[in-house]
Length: 217
Image 1: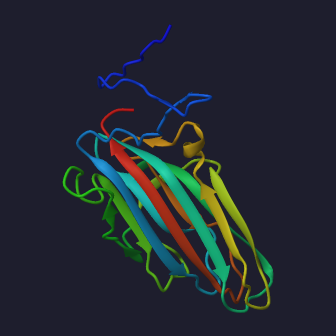
Image 2 (image 1 turned 180 degrees about the vertical axis):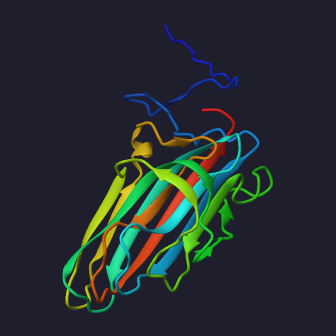
């Protein structure tokens, strides 16, 4: 006996093909209600002797809605000779995040994923990144508390000559069914250069970040 399954929207579920007749499914984005989905990307040049724990990128939730991190993708390539060592970028959840950094910062004007029925970029997020030419101390001046341990890290070698290898860290496990990071008011995340870099350092970093702002999760 055939049966029909009807969803909440009143649409009847369908099947595909004539042999296996598997259920047709489609992954859906998070319901943004009256807010939206956002994306930004930045490429930053490192400086010589980049300080340990120097912040390169940050997002703070300034409102009462929730920010859901949907993708954070880091890339690094060494385009000039350096002094041999190991470098590391780390990503931290931030709490007590009552003020973003104010020194060596840029406020990006980037993209909302659908104009018209989504709130303009960046919603209630405060987004900052380091000046594109870099700064030895990174971004400073904010009020925040880092979790004790990073939730993501990308380790890369610095060599005495330029490299053709691009190192990539893609924190997109949300797309595999795991629970995403959900940030409430005065919470957020950052990306920082974790170790003190010695005299010469020829890295360029690209940070791609997507998130949505939702009224409930």
